[in-house]
Each structure stands twice: as structure tokens, then as C-alpha cells.
Amino acid sequence: MRRLLTVAATVSMLAMLGLSSITASAASSCAPNPNGTTTCTMNLHGATFPVGPPNPPCIPPDATGVVSNVNAVFHFTINGAGDAWFTGTIEGDVTLTVPSTGITYTGHFSQWFGSEFNNKNSVNNATFNAHLTAPNGSTIDSHVSFGFGVSASGQPIMHMKMVC
Image (cartoon, rainbow, N blue to C red; front, side):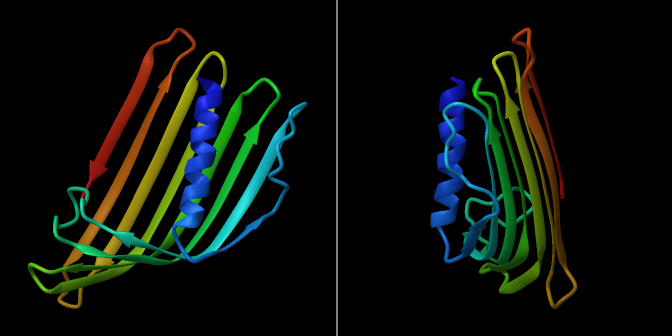
């Protein structure tokens, strides 16, 4: 299961790299080390991604747009026992257009995530924040934090909070 999670996290990160025109650079070697610890840090600059629908509750359901000027840092470490740590920080500009109102919002977002697991437990946490403003003074604000994991005894642990 841990190997599956490791592969899934790595594939997800690489898929995200392929979705946009970006400049990516690895600060450290990303080559696997079958006999020891592998660690890798990747920096992304200038990414652009489409936004919406479906949208979270804070954003009008018909809103579409882009996130641009995205900068990100991803770091992962996997040791010889298969224990792993992944973390990432992402930030950029947001432009959303709401066709039903004709209003365009612009602003900034930031996101952080971290995942760690070993043969006894796992934990995954993330936060997301965005603040957008329209020319008429209306705003869209969103804060989301969530986490889930499994304790060493097998007990699932989960929390989620969203504020608009």
C-alpha cells in the first residue's frame, strides 16, 4: 500500500507538471536510490492552469478562469524502508469570470500540503487561501484546511474546515 501511495503521489506531481507551460527545475537529483534515501526538490515558475467548474461553495457555480504566474516548490523524500514525506507550496494570481453576472474577479491564492507515511501510520494535511476582488468592490474569500490520517492503532483521523 505504501508503494502504491508513493507511486500515486509521484505520478500526480508529474502530471501536474505536464498540464501547463512552465519552467521547472530540480534543486536536487530526482533519481531513485534503491539502497537508501531519495530526496528531491522541484521549483516551478510561470505555470498557468484553467479554473472551474465544478467550483467549491465559495465560488459561483458558473465561474471560469485561470490561475497564472504560479510559483511552486515541491519536496519529497523516500527512505529505504519505504517511508515517505511529500510537501508543496503553491501560490499565484487568479482571474475568475462569472458569466451570469458579467463580473470578473482578480486576486491571489496560496496552497500548502504535506503527506507523510510509514508502516505504522500516515498523515495528510493541506490549506488553501484565496482573496479576489471585482471592480465593483465585491469580493470572494476562501479558506480551506483539511487533514486525514491513520494512527498506529489503525484509527482513522480526519478534519475539514471551509470558511467563505
